[in-house]
Image (cartoon, rainbow, N blue to C red):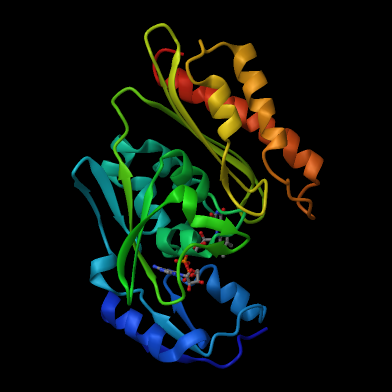
Length: 290
Ligand SMILES: Cc1cc2nc3c(=O)[nH]c(=O)nc-3n(C[C@H](O)[C@H](O)[C@H](O)COP(=O)(O)OP(=O)(O)OC[C@H]3O[C@@H](n4cnc5c(N)ncnc54)[C@H](O)[C@@H]3O)c2cc1C
């Protein structure tokens, strides 16, 4: 099917994009890489009257290191994130996650800003930005604000962004030297989307006691979430297989698991438990003390 008719406007700057969103109101939609928006427009699940193209705004490009953070522009593609030297060395979890997204074409066109703003329940980045406690920066007519990843994903395809806001950057604090990370994903074989994806960050002391652990889960439910009960059960404990199994089983009670053509709720629950164990154990092993 073809999309319904729409007007097209190219924004030259973020302020320009915000002004266009305000001018065209509810009928306007931003487009970046187009790899989530265009498919749903072709299915007529979205019928924007005006597309505001932000795909060539220079201030949304690039990766930089500043004040102990890696700052990633919204237009950074999945391929750039998977291969960027600064991201690979400072936050390998994000690079690993980006490398699993879709296929080469999707990774070359799709952007981190578009993926986060779209908030597809099967998208990969949410697991990583939750485990990394990223800050998502948005700018609108009221100015700029930093939204913690934990407060960003609200529901199915719904985020904390306001209709006139542009996601401009993702800020990620550089984790301590020696931290461990892991992304475990059961992928849909056709698209690459996560049926379940689990991102974990771990920090152990010299006695193998968990100093910190953070677990983000995507795909399993309508919205990505932090597996807080699992994390709490591990913090301050000596890391042993039995402790990890018991902690991972706590994901059971944390969320309403999705039940759809890709898997029943019970299947997703079991897969989530298993991938949570694997992610924590691999992150612990990479921390060099696991
Ligand atoms: C065949 C295929 C396979 C895929 N496989 C995967 C996969 O395995 N894992 C995965 O995670 N994703 C997958 N995707 C989705 C892909 O990652 C998209 O690139 C991504 O979800 C959206 O990024 P985009 O730049 O293309 O956004 P667009 O499609 O341009 O926009 C998506 C939405 O975000 C809004 N938006 C875009 N940029 C901004 C911004 N800066 N500020 C505010 N709102 C904004 C738009 O208005 C729109 O509502 C797949 C897509 C396809 C077509």
